[in-house]
Image 1 (cartoon, rainbow, N blue to C red):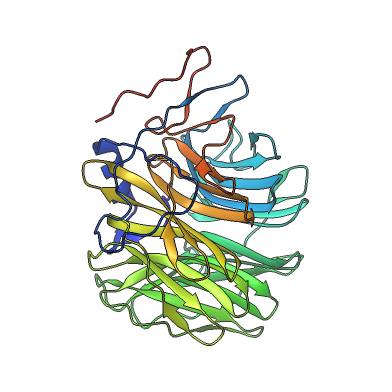
Image 2: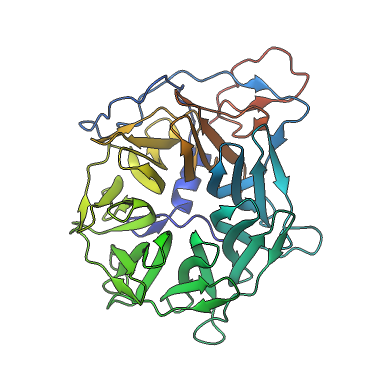
Length: 422
């Protein structure tokens, strides 16, 4: 199974996951409002906090073993999340406004399922949603029709006999959907759904030996974005890669210089003149990388300090004055901590996040409703958080991170803080 596609100075996110297992953790309590970023500190997201007490699980509480990599919302009462189970089978989950439930997919059903992982989600309507990823070295594409998920044939790998990994999907309409990723030769892959079939669309690559696309955003038939990274030479630091669709072709769009390199893992657009891309810095610098599109050019916008190996994995922009970005960082003596940042039209600021681990997806439907998903350790326990307009919390009826607030088993009596883990 492919783990989420974040790179830290050329190293995969598995490094962060290993550190999570090896470190003791203390979760940070929630707060009523976004807090100011401590940009002067190398560990702005690592301030010690009180361990929140867990709730007692109800009879309908759901525990998901595995990891969630993406989340997308149609409305506050219709949200999808996707990833993989602890058995490395693709999995989707649905929020109906009251509770989360697992929804089986043809690739993830037992006993005939094959190893795989969903990494991207896009929702067009209640009867039209897409999930993409990788299964057995091949691209995995499934469609929701309001009743069931069904597997949809994807284009054969190019070159023939190779492999394809799809990392993200974005929809401008029911007949205009994009999915992006890489092939086994280290070249970018972009496929397009025209309402009937998926087809390959030529995509540019850097002059170096490898390029990859991790995030996508679709605004209209003549305006879409894809972001990722590329290498100048074998073994060198990665550099951010930005590509744009103008209705006719995909082209590389120059971005700002990033000393030491870096990677962009996600992109979201509120309009043709307002878009955000996020990722991580390279060369061992650590920290989140945030870039903004103003309709003419991409520029770097400062991010709060995120701790050692800090990184941003996902972003959602609902308006020019409201956007969320999520990820994680390593805190000395505390282990891995989830990271959430908010844009208020002037600057990005850290917002308290209750979970340990890593957040890899985020979506928002209103100023009072947003969702973030991720994992405590890779493949072990999923994480879901909800923004209610005042604070990020664990949703009722969902149990997750054993070292975070989560839930105690039914019949446990009064909640009590869990014992420290090391």
